[in-house]
Length: 189
Image (cartoon, rainbow, N blue to C red; front, side, top):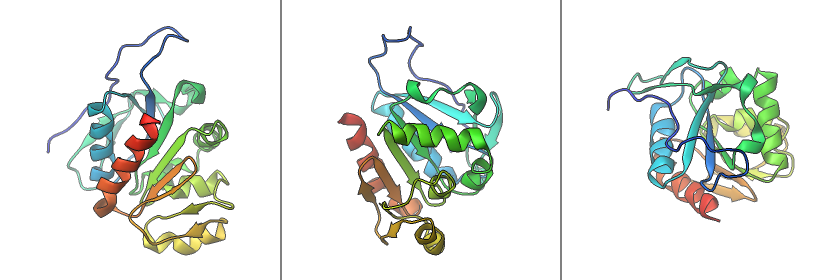
């Protein structure tokens, strides 16, 4: 699988002129390789603009299995939630590294408050719990996090994908096809 570089797949346009939906991928070191790579490639292939938002711009971010790495397009300090139509939160150790950053938590809160798509797989919902977004929601996540998700107010379902309003959640890399399918369905709406 070689290394991949971050980067948008559509040119920047003036505010108000954007016709292509834009998807933010929130990423830090230690992400689950395929949970970033496969949705990222599927979203780009479907014709949407992508940006990788890390804790700082230009950071080299490595997957925990070492099969892929990405360079962040933006740091969270410069990311504006209003510019995005959806956010994807891959699993692995990345969400744990992101959830302690107040600006990252606020970014996710603002995306949700605008009823934009929030897609999180595996450990991704940890960031949603830190953002206090799980009360009254039905989600899934990595099975070992069930108690944490319930304690954060969510109803937990052990299914390959759970869609609840603007949320799309999945459990692990085996669920990627269903996760990607539902994410793309939301983006087409």
